[in-house]
Length: 375
Image (tube, rainbow, N blue to C red):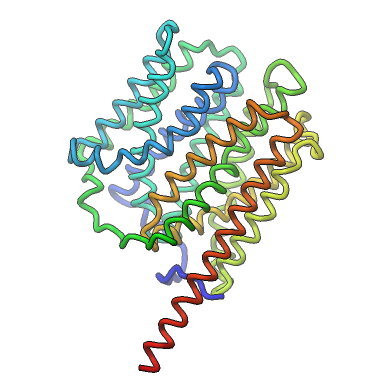
C-alpha cells in the first residue's frame, strides 16, 4: 500500500531548531511543563468536572484558533499565553464556586492555541514533527521532576507553573501570526472523518500516563506514590530518546512506512488494555507497562506528519480532545477493572475504521488516475 503522504524527505535534520523555529520550540517546551504538571496533579486537586474540562479543553479549544487570529492578529500568540497565565493565577486563588472551572478553561484555551501554532509550524516535515514531539516530551519529563516533590501545596504549585510561562512572553511577542502562513489544502469530508478517528485514538493513547495509570494506582491506595512522577519522566525520556531513531526506521520502510507506524500503535493499544495484568499499581508493573506504551507512542508522530500533508492537522488535534476527555470520564466513572479495556477497544475500533477509510481513499485515487491515463 502506498502512503498518501506525498512529500518525500531524505532524512531527519535540525532545520526546525533554527531561528524563530527554535524560539517557538522553547515555548512548546515550557508550556508543556505547565500543562503536564497540571494534568498530573488534576487527579488529586481538581474535581472530576474540572479534570474533564482540562483534559478536553486543552485540545478542543483549538477550534477558537481562527477566531483568535481574526480578533487579535499579530497579538494572538501573546494574548493566548496571557490567558494561560491568568488561568494559573486564578487557580492559585482561594477556591470559590465556579472559579476552578473558569480558570481551567482560560488555561486550556491559552495552552491549546499556543501549542497548535508551534506544532503546525513544526509538522511541515517528519523531522519537524519529531522535534516537536521531543520538546513536548522533554516538557513532560520536567513536569515529572516537579511531581517528584511530595510537599507541593496547590497555591505555590500553580504560581510555580505561572513563573515557568513568563519567559515565553519575549519569544512570542513578535511572532508572525498563523494566518500569514500558507495554509495546507483542506482535506475532503471523508478525509476529515478519517483524521477525526485518528485523533480520538491518539487522545486515548496519550492519556494513559495522565489518567489510566494514576486512576489504576488510586484504586489500590489512597494517594499517588512518590514514583508516579518518575513514570511521567520514563514516558518522556523514552519518547525523547527514541522518537527520532524510530521515525527514521519507519521512513526506511518506504512504501510500507504507514503500515510500520500503525503496527507500532496497535501493539501499544493492546498493552493499554491490560493495566491489571501488568499490576501497574506496583513500580515494576508500571515500569514495564508504560515503557511499552512509550515505544508505541513514537509512531504517532508519523500520523501528525501525514495529517499535515492532507490539511487535516487541526481536525486531528481537535479530536484528540475527545479521546482525552473520554479517557478521563471513563477512568473516573466506570469500574476500574473494565475502564481500560473499554478505552483500548474504542481506540482499536477507531484505528481499524481509519485503516478502512484509508484503503478506500487510496483505491479511489488509484482508479481515478488510471481513468485519467486511459483518456
